Image (cartoon, rainbow, N blue to C red; front, side, top):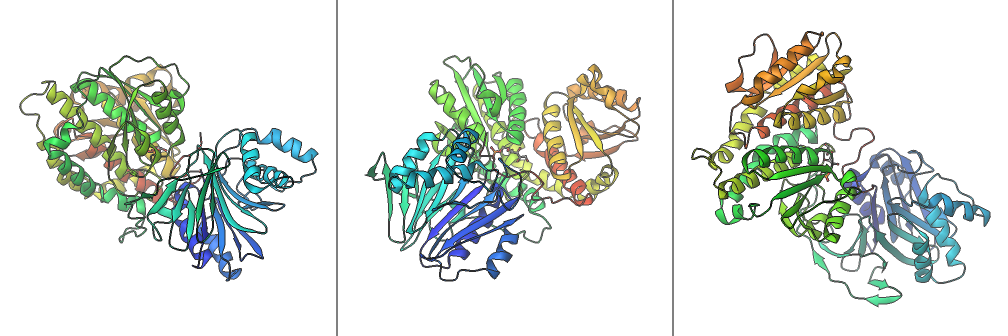
Length: 593
Ligand code: F6R
């Protein structure tokens, strides 16, 4: 993943670079570094850990007259998170930062070692720096960069500085990088939020474009010739980094759910907008996404099949990319992504395009690759999520899918008279009620947090909610948890049930209530401790720890249950002393395969 920023101009270079790195920390946060130059002397400063660790070093070691520089925040792929592997990497005359994975780095490195190069890191990025340094010995910069890219297999975004040359160079393939255009200053960045404080004008780079930046100009070359590229305007508001009095961004973002939901629901109360969500022309939908976004897709699958009579397949994008695809004329591929930059989801979208299949993106980031490239897009407009674990964006993904099902079913005349839009309009107030019961989630968290493992079980749509509840718990609290279809446990997994192991059973579908509760009882007969998450109208369960949410329509019920599970995960993580907003080993946006 990794975040890249570069700057050339009159501002204090380290301020721009560090501000940018803080905005890009969502892309990785295991080490960071900057390279700055005043045109004569270059300095590289690196640290392990978060950007604030780097800032402490930069403060002490500032090259105050620097006029340009590049910086990087890392999510380790090749080589562990240590100071040697942190970027920037310097080899000979070349200093660079890299995002992506160079798949043939080992082979290239072997040859470079034979040619006399010595390496100080385990990274593929240092190999690219050495290759460029080698090429520079026989030709000019542009030609050298072209020669290097011909040799590289894999994905990359590079920000490059070259000794004795006061330009910055930038290029990309399958990893994001844009060029920010300012007045007497220019930028490069993995995404616009890193530079939006300074400019909203940017240029997108295509494969084989090489951008050359100095204070007064940005020139783009393609195949050795200068080309013109359109300047785009972003309406991003940047990242609101404040926690608004909450202890964590995750908690703040959960608490924002009623407001962002009501914005979305008000928008689609307008018949013209709602009509844009109608999918009644399609016979089959493939929902393709990763992680929580895929679990939102599972909720959508249950709704579409149950209420709109449309067959839906849900695939993790990483699997979809490499599977045989069978389509008819009336198929649609739906890509769901908060960031719009998830590498596997982007690749899946491009595969579908190559096969001539129509795509629809449900995306939160309006400036993202998926938002730009999909045939049709629906923006969720949840605002920026800072906590690595998604909460409000997931809820809005589910809401869009639910609205799509509703209008499709309505237009197919599959709804009864009492199934109307009012369930959506009432949802934000009901959700506020759910979020108001923090002490209940805390008290269940108290019973969970010392455990080593737990299960979430449910059937049908409730299983889809189990998947999300279980993922949220393990990613933020590191408590091992598994989601299982309630009826499947006894086919093997029930052997894991031990005395006092928590089994959280989700029951929102009244048709499946008795079946799920029998499965819960099977685990209790083997020592498990049942915890029930259900709705007010279904609650007649005696002697259980319970989370009870208000009853609403099946179109909207999941959007009351999952927030309760999010809060439960939050409190378990809090009691376990975890780094809630930035869990270990993760990054917010997964831009590598
Ligand atoms: C979990 C989480 C991830 C993302 C997944 C897809 O809390 O945030 O599972 O849902 O990495 O990311 P996007 O939606 O950006 O494509």
